[in-house]
Structures are given as structure tokens and as C-alpha cells.
Amino acid sequence: MARPIWSGAISFGLVSIPIRVLSATENHSIAFRQFHEADMGRIRYQKVCELDGQIVQQGEIGRGYEISRDTIIEVTDAELDAMPLPTAKAIEIVAFVPAESIDPVRIGDSYYLAADGAVAAKPYVLLRQALERSSKVAVAKYAVAQPGAPGPAADQG
Image (cartoon, rainbow, N blue to C red; front, side, top):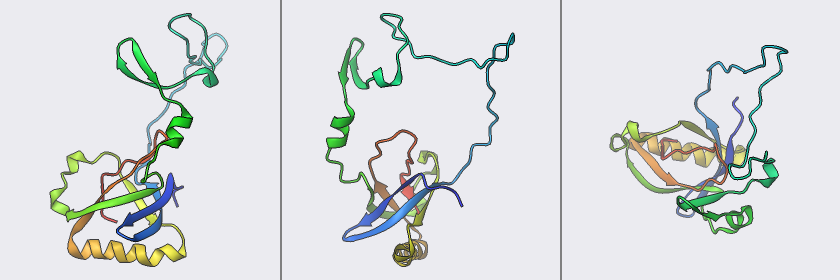
């Protein structure tokens, strides 16, 4: 079975079901490595400051939001951690809509949701069956703090 890429809960109203998110696709592309032909040493990329030309280590790199070409507002990990995100560990269902009302072109990457544990299995299956019987999908919102995390806009269970 695929390894979960995120775990939390799916919630609607007063119902909260522990879930795991699994990628529905795999990358099967071939990745080539660059090397120095003279001695087969791998070529590495370094992060270099464009102002002073110095090589910068990962611990020296900050992050920020660019509001104009020369103005960046720094955003720290502490500030991100302190943000009140009610959907930080939950996928909150905001509506149930007919499946045909979702344009597949607007859906990015695909993910599977799975119940997280035996206790969550029964309510998760009930939700999935209700969606299937009604031909509806759940439209949800959530917040993700780390890059590469899932981004489903709609899920049918």
C-alpha cells in the first residue's frame, strides 16, 4: 500500500473522521544525473546570494513575500506556526454538489483518502456510500504548510 503523504481528519458539521491522504499517481519518469566527464564526479547546484556572490547554506536562507520588485516582507516559521488555521489538520467539507458540476479540467493532482484506523472505517465508508448513492461530491477546503502536500479541490470519497 502507498505511504500516506498527510494525515488529519475530514470534517463536516459536528462530524470528524480521521483520514490519511495517499497519492493516486506515481512519477515514472527517468531522472538523469549530471557528472564531470573527466572523473565522473556528480555536479551539484549551490545557492548563491546575488548581491555578494557568497554560497549560502540552507540555515541561512529565509523566506518572504515579494510585494514589489525591491521589497520583500520576511515571513518566519514562527509566524507561520502562530497563524490561526482552523483547517491545518482537517479537510473541511464546505458543500456537497452534483458530480457533473465539477469541471475535471480544474482538478490538479489526484489523491486517495482512506480511513485512518479501524474506528474511522465505518463512518468513512458511510460518507463514501452516501456520496456514491447521491451522485454528489464533497467540495472541501484546507490549509497546507509544507510544499508538495496534496491539493484536492473536490473528492468523491
